[in-house]
Amino acid sequence: AQRVTQPEKLLSVFKGAPVELKCNYSYSGSPELFWYVQYSRQRLQLLLRHISRESIKGFTADLNKGETSFHLKKPFAQEEDSAMYYCALVGGSNYKLTFGKGTLLTVNP
Amino acid sequence: DAMVIQNPRYQVTQFGKPVTLSCSQTLNHNVMYWYQQKSSQAPKLLFHYYDKDFNNEADTPDNFQSRRPNTSFCFLDIRSPGLGDAAMYLCATSRVGGGATELFFGEGSRLTVL
Image (cartoon, rainbow over all chains, first blue to last red; front, side):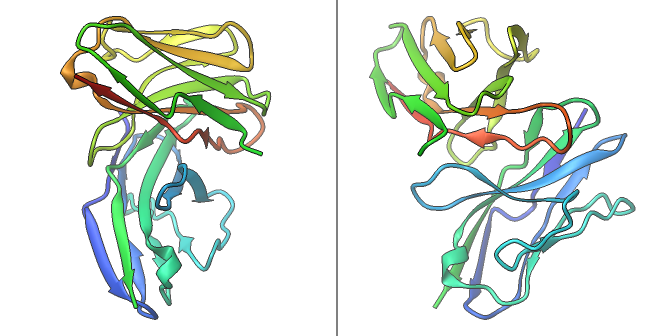
């Protein structure tokens, strides 16, 4: 079974502060990990994936297999980063996406 | 230039009155998914089509059915909606094969059951 845990339901930071959204997963094989984001009144969309090892909108995420974590980080949060963030996993050849419960990030001015 | 379109965006129905939600895509993706999302919960996969092959999740109630008449369209039928079926229903598509799997989502259909 595959499972994704996001321990923080709500996270509030001030503009310019660093932000880290936590994600832990449970999967026995080699998963693909993703972060999806949903801005207010918009559809759910992909933010980044671990395979690409890229930085999107200043966000990065590193897959730590030892800790089974995929935390999302940004050194300097912006107000426009306020959104719901979902960590998600696809296990092996299974192409079904399993979501965590999400973290609502609020960046205050 | 929306690529995954869901209709209606808002649906109100009465307890037990059948409802159909639709999803269309312009991406020519081979997989289409239906997720149910209740307030403050993670999107939960109900079922998906891989081309014409239907794949039901083990815990999806029999009350939920789906049809995919062609590549572009997929429907979610709720035969006898109960109060517990009130939720946001998300359609998503992906092209499976050749790299990481990215899902493209529609804006969702919010179902209210009276």
